[in-house]
Length: 266
Length: 317
Image (tube, rainbow over the protein chains, first blue to last red):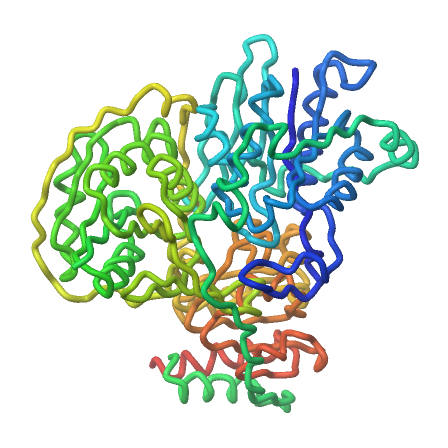
């Protein structure tokens, strides 16, 4: 089984994020591997481990795919430390400012060239939070779309994947033949910490760097130039005016109700 | 006048309140047409519920494939309608389903996409509140149909009444949209409480509940509110994950958000910062959640909430 996991490097959740020229300023903040992608890496690793393992020892492989500036290599390195076998990074100055449509186009192209059976993703990135890229990749590749998975069962013999799709609309059991794009919700597993051995091994794992020319993608179709939506302006929201704060003297609950009545909320 | 299409959605067989919100938003932009995706034989029953004053036309598409093949089949049908009628905008409610459908329709119709808007102006400039509520962004789609998903509760539901023209469209879903099959479906557990993302009022509990949500639930029920939880509470197994508010849970924007025993880590704030009014009960006077509070009580939630519940009860009787 050949599995790809799409990951993204994002600003640390704790960092203050700013917009600059209509796009997120990625330079001025600490960058980490998107939390939610770790669940996708973990699930991919668990699946290959249950099917004879990956790497030199097994018949399977897990390849990490990421698009971003050069320092994306740091996020990818963490995925390799967890146990993925190889990585492909797409980096190109023309990619800056890409929207979800362009991102899915680039990732789909890399996946198409890799002859994968399954692609795993997190459900969203903690910066843009659109939750659309996994579905868009499936749409572009005309692959089965198994998204928001709370559990994944893979049958290598019949080449089928079955998931439980967990959303606000309920729980659906969905089934598809390979190839499929699977996005996983964070309750699916507990991602492993990279071991010392894993961290050392990651340094020797192959990382292939691609750019738009090597993928055969026209630069005008991606990045800010190719984006099909533009940001007119972005402004920090003014800090909220200080509210009322009282210390409960035994009548805190009553005061709370009085506040709700005054605001016509009850 | 521009043509705006909205995707009507149903909870079971009943029209969702968010559809009336899309109607209000659409009315501010142009002529509104609603798209109804229905199981075979149910089209007219579903379409007959679309009586919002701002909607002039309803396009009904019946197919068993919508239930069987989820997002891909729905997106294909909607894209077909959009490619045929070329509306200026397509509005869909932000949800896991709505956003994925919007993304796939964007690809199928060569259109730009904006998700989680809280407002859309008459000239299709969308307002988004991003980075956990810390920035406001105005953006526009520049190619194709403006596909915009709207957060629930961003608009008041259209209360006017009308009788739109109902049209049936016959669309065959192709095999390329039937790759992932829904084998079985289970609706969300009915608890008699409103759905978190649609609720006008949410009462949430965190670490401070120590796992006892009874006071939170009692107060919520008296207010007709949904119950939310912080990640600390759901990770501890005190409350189902489906109730988690925050960065890795639901993003909510109710009229009133009552945070009980929640410290207010940035990940939680990211999910509730756009709530209109925030009330906080917390023992720790330095808890960061107080920064968001319109009204904060420094105190024990197990003392303050029951007293507040009594107060609400007394007002009702």
